[in-house]
Structure formats: structure tokens, C-alpha cells
Length: 542
Image (cartoon, rainbow, N blue to C red; front, top):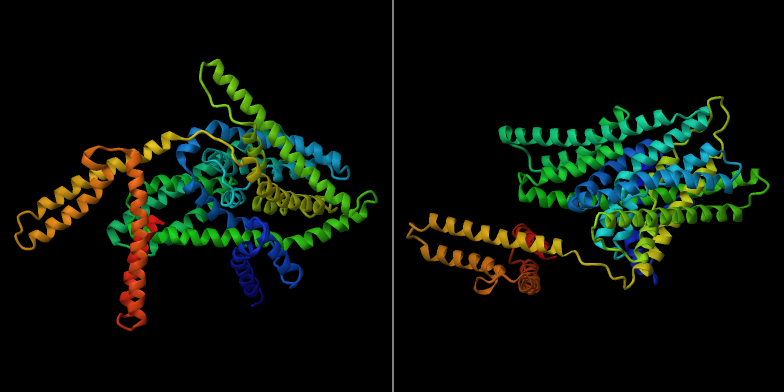
């Protein structure tokens, strides 16, 4: 019962954090509020949980990474694949080397392999943390796509570097050839697992539904289980479960484009996934906060063992490491950008040269989160000879500090850096949307005419059918423009006006139905049905 109470307390903290953020007189990122509430639960109420990193990875990361991979724009992911790979591979290795030597220089008592292990686990950015910051900071779309792609792919690089740094700390040996081969296996096998699991499950589900039928909730439950299956399958063959979950989500987006899922299933599934994302995101940061009191206590205990280390120097070192990570990221982004521009100019290509503030924003947006925390907690407790693992508690403290500082810096710095920053529009995306709407409206009119011919020979209620055809056809003709002239800009203005009027009408419908219920002139069963229809229509315009 005690564990149930802790879970309920964490869920209440997640719910309360949303209201608390709105009550505060100044802007505070939601993850930081959730971390603070988690610390309150553990420190004040003396109720916390012992965080098992393996369970943490399994329960929280697969569904969240799966959803990020599913919803990330694939056009942007493949268009900027070169930049994303530079950040996901090159930047991580560069950070491990640079931050590793920096940490060892700042904390001489921490052996170099342990410093590299700490650098490796703080090198990857976290997709959940990046998404939480993006929800409150107006990051340009293309930059956001790059950051999301980077955070989804750089975990494998960081975790492989972390694994070999820990092995070097345990054995005193390191093999570059073995590390390279392991990285290829971990990455490629993980991606293959995610793709294979998703495609296989989708095929089996489709065949079973065609031959046997299925319960309405079955496709949603299967969809929720896919990331866990992909993660466990990859981990079983010692590949990257994280990349398996990501690739499963990316594959699911292509499976979804087959259009075989029912509309009601897609609507319900979206609601379920939104709830899962909100709950797991919040609980994850609350859990991080619950670990903080004990982490700080252990780090202070370690600090007392070193006469030259005080609580203030401990805090100063944590800030220095965080600043070093930002500077390393800034250097890498600036140099890689200049090389990309130089290469393009040599090939006679015209490329957009971004404002330096955009480079700074990319550096500040390197937010760390749950993957860093869960990874650093997997540091061994002892060496093979039985001696305590050197500087383990200090490493966990510094990783925790990096998470909090990165969240603070991104939340405070990004709005100021991006304020009034002019970025080029992406007319191609707008043109694609206009063309898709135009083609869809034309196809709809053809389908309406074809359906109308099927009722043409029926004299009974012919006028009713004709009126319905005219009404529905008129909606699509209106979207195509007056007099057959298609003007995308006028169509967008018309759609905005239509949205405003439709929302006002739907609000009035809902008010009228609720008034009938309150007057006991309408049963609650019929009212729920009518309100659901209104809600579904309103969700299209929301």
C-alpha cells in the first residue's frame, strides 16, 4: 500500500505542477516545477522510491521515444539528416573527449575513465526534455526538427561511449576496434529490431482483423505494447533498445499512412497517447526530483572526504561543467556550420547563412534529462576487487546538476536569444499543404457526384438527396475558391473565418444540449452521444 501511495503522490504532483506553473508570478519551466515537487515528496514527506535504472528505462523511455519517433516530421528528418548525424555522432564524441578532460581537470580525484563515463552520459540531449522546453519557447520549426532528430539518435552514441568508459574504469583496458564494432551492432541491430517488430505486428494485426474481427480497444492496446516489444527484443540481443523504440515509432508513422485504421480508432488512440505522454513525462521528472535529496547528501559526504572540496566548490564545479558543455556544443555547431557553408559554396550552391543567434540558440537547446539520470545511476557500486567505485556519488551529483542547469539555461536563455529573430519562411511546406487541400477537395467533389448518381434513379426523397448533395458539394467548392479560381491565400482566409463561425456555432449547440439536460428534457445517454459528435467536430477546428 505504501508504494501505491507514492505513485498516487507522484501523479498528484504532476497534476498540481500544471496549476502551480500558472499561479507563479514569473515563468518557470514545467519540468523544473515537477523536479521541485519530487524533491518535496522525498525530503519533506520522507516518502520516495528506490529508482532501479533498468526498470526506469523499460517503463518510461520506450513509449515516450516511440511517440517522438512517430510524430516527428519525416520530411525534416531526412532533409536535415546530415546536420542531425553530425550532432548525434560527431558532437557526442567531441563532447565526451572535451568534457572528459575538463571534468578530470576540475576534479582531480575523479579518475580519467570515470570522468569520460560522466562526460558520455551527459553528452546526449533528451527528447522528452527538449519537447518540454519547446512547448513554452517559440523555437523555429526547422531548428526544432533538427533538435528532435538529434535527441532521438544521439543516445546510442552516448550510451556506447559510457559503456566502454565504465569498462575501462573497471578493467583498465580499452579497445577502439571493439568499441567501433560494438557501436555498429548496437545501432544497426537496434534499428532493425524496431522496424521488424512494428512491421510484423502491423501485418499480423491486419490479417487477424480481416479474418476474425477485433474488439474496438484492441488496436490501441497493441499500439501501446509495440515500443515495449521492440525495446525488449533489442536488449535481448544486446542492441540499443532506445534506438529500437525510436525506429519503431518512425516505422509506425509509415504504417499509419496505409490508412487502414478506422477514424474512431485514430481519434481514441490519439487521446490515449496524449494522456500517456503527459503522465509519463511528468512522473519522470518527479522521480528525478525524488532522487535529489539523497544524491546531494551522498555528494556532500564525498566532498567531506576531500579537504580541498567544500559545498561551494562542489556547486561551482557543477556550474563549470555545465558551462563547458554549452561551450563545446557552441564550438561544434559553429565549426560544422561554417564547413557546411564552405562545402556548398565550392559546389556552386546558394545556402542560407543563419544569424549567429540561431547558433547560440542551438547550443542553449542542448537540454539533458531522464536518460542522463537513469544512465548515470547504472554506474557500478564496486570495482572487480571489491573496492568502492571511485567518485560514483560525485558523478551522479554532477549529472543531476547538469540536468537542472541545462533546463534553467534553456528556459531563461532561449526566449531572449530567439526574441525578434528573423528566420526564412518555409514556403515549400505551405505550398504542400495548399496542394494537398486542393487535391483532396477535388477528389471529394468527384466522390460526391459519383454517390449522387447512385441515388439519381430513386424518386423517393430525391429532393432531399439533391439538397444534401448541393450542401456538401458547396462546402468543397467554397474551399476551392469562387468561380473555380483557386487562390490559396483567399482560401486560408476563408478557412479561418469558417473556423471562427463554426466554433461559435458548436459552442451554442453544446449550451443548448446542456440546458435540455439540466431541465430534464433530455436523457444523459443521448446527451453524451450528441456532445461527443460536437466534440469531434470541434477538435478539427481546435
